Length: 397
Image 1: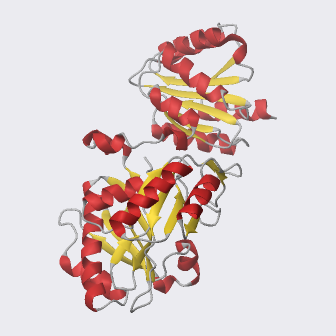
Image 2: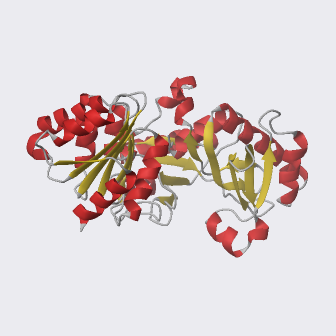
Image 3: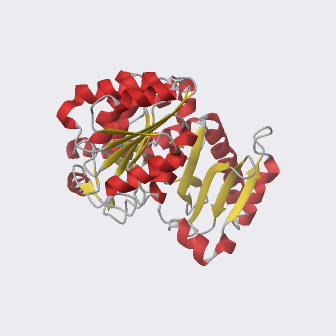
């Protein structure tokens, strides 16, 4: 589950990470009120107005601007709230901005020049350890840094059993070329950042940039946070941070009815039980000359109601030209799934206008094939994987 910047910063702050402070506003008038309160609390004279959407590169799309007075706060907030923000990480339509973060200006003058760093915490799946990835080149696309100057990308692996050790935090600060107060501040920052990642059961914490201010404070100017959905039962307060407006409506609907679903850009809808079989089915569609329109796992209880909901979700995609149902009857009987397909087909009636190929293998597969073949519906049955692939290829031809 992805979070907005202000939500990620709330988690960071709760673990002792120093952040660029700010307040959320949903209207230009509330933005002015937020700016006034922020000035009282922090003394900031200028304010940064940031669009709150689940996408990076907001500044490039005009979603991050500096306001030098309250009049500009109101004007800029009015421009950003309600706009469709297009960034390198959104579709061409962009994402509608419902709220902005009014943040303090942390690039104030002082004895030293501010410096920006990149830092993220994530799991290294190859080693089974957590990893801090960091670079002295912050505030820019880290992908570009990795491609053009890979020697400026550092990593520090951390054993989850021990957590981050003091020497590791110091190593990060040393590699970033820090000394004195900034060195001490960075070691505290890194330790708190890792503890926030670990304690919140996150899959990613990305701070770009981490800022060394002109008076050598270290703080998070941005925060991109992804929480592990499987661990949300331990964090009821985090679960309430979910913003469904930022998610694909079809995926939201699928989650509400208990289906594992990911929307893709292809033309063949998939309905499968089991993630492994779903991935194999998507490969099958590719080999047959099609493109998978979705990943959809109906799980072990593929009854009529569940199958019907899956049909509705797949058919909501106008790009779908065919549907492949591929079920292995282990926990669930194939004939029960077949009956579910027949019942769902009849309930949906004229809504189904694309050919359907059904492959059922496992318990009562023979009976299931007979049910499909004798249904009188526009549904073709298959027994072998290759047979199903051939039929997909045929209907797409």
